[in-house]
Image 1: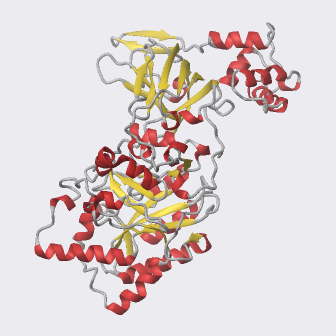
Image 2 (image 1 turned 90 degrees about the vertical axis):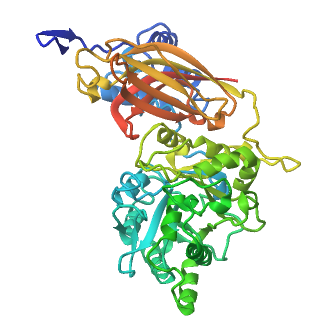
Image 3 (image 1 turned 45 degrees about the vertical axis):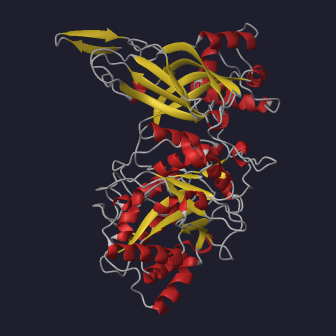
Length: 591
């Protein structure tokens, strides 16, 4: 019973009641229990095959394990006297996210293709604890990202004030620095805590050749045998994630290209003031890749205005330092010099990485979409947030994924719907951080044609989703968290994030004064590209006078959904799973 104060003098009392099983669950139980009150293991197995899409490989022992676990949790004494489930036990099983998950939780994609055949969980400015201007640099956000399964971390490396050591921070801002060696040691400790597949470190390099040599020594001494670098100067094809398990890969511009690029910038600065297009906090870069640096416009500005001269080393030290550092770079990045069309050319016998801002990608998608897809079939494309996202917000990742971009770099310390979508995509394939790109992005026709992201496509399949009910808020939140005077009024928003033709959001009716709302509403989603579709689910609490309160969210890859009745746990704004809050839903595909 919960009491809510009214008009300072009176109290309203509401009983927190557990909603019983939905009518669909009752009907299914009766059918498989042959009209009785107990469901045995063999009957449960048949339910798993028929309704849950378990297939003929679902064994009797699988069903017995479920029965045993449910009885252990609900009836620790009765488990010794019976081996069947009641209706309430059956409902408990269906509503348990760990026993009845909505998506696959194992690595099941082919992991033997080249790295460029995968979307990779990628961070941007991985060391920042908050915004892009004044927050602290630390190894803590790097650790959190690695524990979540992120497989690409980015470090901006700079000389310290004495020019004798290397620090990590966001140049030309008020962000505080952290020593590079601290970041590297934490990376070593947590690199494979969530996934055994390769970790890529992208370095935004602002160092003299002397310090580049020092970084090379740090990398070798810290990572030892886990560091992967090719025997030849450049790779003809990237190795597979399977082959590179428990290996760490370095990606940056080779020193020669770095020196040339920054030397050119230095000389141009002597002739004129810095162009506003190169200023991270000014106008954004134009659509040609020539005006895009390897990483991001804000780092461009930092490199151009550094306090030391990158060309100041004597020829001998340049020759000694550069080869040692260059040898460790497995994925070469470089600044394109002759426009976007030229930058996207696929070079025979050579693979590389190209970086574009989110805006440059949008412009490239308008005029060179198929060229981008063709480039990403063999080479890496990294997309990064525009320089004016001071608050560490993010952008729509689907544009990059539609064009085959492997590294869609995100500010993992932020939050919002786009970050929820990123989390959702990389729940795929057991959360290992590598998601095999759909075949249509890799296919080449008899005349060299590739997928055109702008083409109109027909519906491939239709997803039917039924939202039965929700529960757990009364356990995770105070009784007045949502409404001071009464229990919450919940509704669910549900829809698809995907290609433009598939994008849609719908909502249930609002259930008034219910901690355990029951909706029983069904929605239909026709999908033209189900391989890239994400099911967005949000629960909100209706507020008549203010902005509706947030009650939880999740984002699920449609390609990973298990059919049947499933428990769906919800997460907070930052992507942390709520302890008790979950929805009971039904998923079905219609071809």
